[in-house]
Image (cartoon, rainbow, N blue to C red; front, side):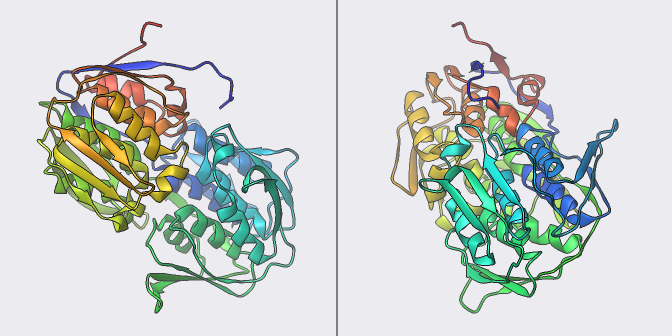
Length: 450
């Protein structure tokens, strides 16, 4: 996404009951990993249901630049002809990941143990996000890097031709960091062992096993979880079906809960236990959410979700749940605004390090909409105003953050007066078709008068 593109303001106003079936996009986390592992495998990997959003398309472009053949056929199936572990080639140009923290960090791991040099950059938002948390531990494999002060992009990563396996305890609860190290370990002879004290999403571990990597996940004597991976690996190509993204589903789910009379169904949703923290929290708040037809697809649990308008109550969200729903806190705060009583959310340090400082942005936006909210460095408190009690009547500064934009457009669908966002253009990084989806459900969106 160009830094200087024209902003696209959008306005949401109080809507009639929302209804219908919502086919949200494929899961973004799994889409990134499918492309990267396909490029590291031998043979042809096919991917059905890939999220065709800007973030994922940037990763597809990066894998092409690194020598893999990546194509989309007329039926929407993506095909990746991989180069094998250690077989990626040096790109001719800078790798530009736009707004994608996941793509940039995971690809850093994929190239760190191959003797090539890559320059990583992104848009203005991504260039503010910390990368040393990934780059620094990659040096333990033998890689080298140079970056802007503070470990910021642009950064040059020089992969090593003589990688070594490592034993490492993760300093932050981040699936991106963990996944980058696992990808680097694939080409490091010997067994790499990673320990995480807080359990983070495990899509990389599941997918590595599906591609044939020798990976073992077990309880760590030190507490938490230990993951060991045998390096010098050979990955086999496979067929992947991407389930629907729970982070994208969060927006229509919360919209149905706060717009009176609404009733929605969201089919084939990813229900990995490490991604369902929002559903668990909403149920604790009194949400009428049910899961139908639980089943398994590609090693991941999926199911159909039915959601109805509900009178919600404030909730206390424990810090250990943060890793399973870190992207969903802005829209959870919107749900909390329409609840009765106070909601307190703990363990949110990572929220300040996303596409924007989401903790600060969310509190400011709630306050602008007439909802009392405050935050410390790791806690957010929202004083709910009950069903229909949020004033709205605000223009929200999104800070180039797609989830802030979608969260407060969701709020505007149920507030007394309209809510606009200064820029909705970046929503395409994760949820192409968001506006169409809202309108198809009966939501009222419009371009505001300037």
